[in-house]
Image 1 (tube, rainbow, N blue to C red):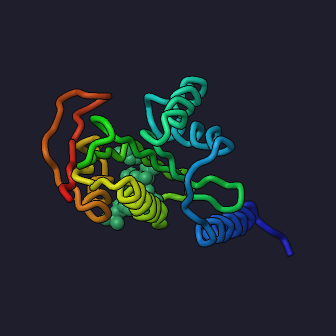
Image 2 (spheres, protein in one colour):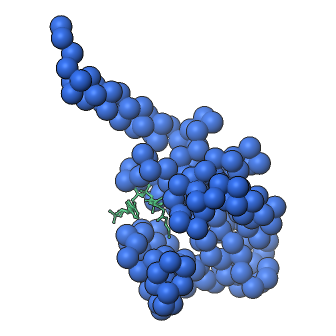
Length: 183
Ligand SMILES: CC(C)(COP(=O)(O)OP(=O)(O)OC[C@H]1O[C@@H](n2cnc3c(N)ncnc32)[C@H](O)[C@@H]1OP(=O)(O)O)[C@@H](O)C(=O)NCCC(=O)NCCS
């Protein structure tokens, strides 16, 4: 049978879609280890304009990792494949009524739109709550910021109960919306 280039590429699209679906189905959300940092830096570099320089991205990720428990990375993982990550950062000291920011969230491009971002936030948020409770403290506020035109706003409302609080004009590369969940 003659396989046309179109049929051939459709076949490979189906194969890669199946592969992507199988990776995201069998994933777990876990605390990041040192071994995960290079993958996190690569995803950040592909996802955010301020992280295009991979060397700087690696340095920034490494600094946050070393700041544990003030900074806590979580990864969505299938075997050794990192599909996405979240970075939580505690603000204003280790307070009795703690304030955390979901500082960064990204999912690899090919894996977006399959519920991975939602899963990372839900599971990592639970882990942060457990961590604060174990310390004998409570979680008062979760802050998250995003570009005013970013679709992620819905995601933060659904998963964290965060509501828009104010807009900072011309912050990173555009206007930035601050969202707050009061717990
Ligand atoms: C935002 C992001 C982490 C969401 O992860 P995801 O796995 O695609 O998310 P989900 O499949 O769980 O979908 C959750 C919501 O995100 C929205 N979403 C999907 N793709 C998106 C994208 N490229 N950018 C922003 N939001 C997106 C969806 O509309 C969905 O909302 P809905 O449930 O109301 O339809 C991911 O798209 C991403 O890494 N984007 C680039 C980096 C980024 O913008 N990070 C957030 C910065 S504040």
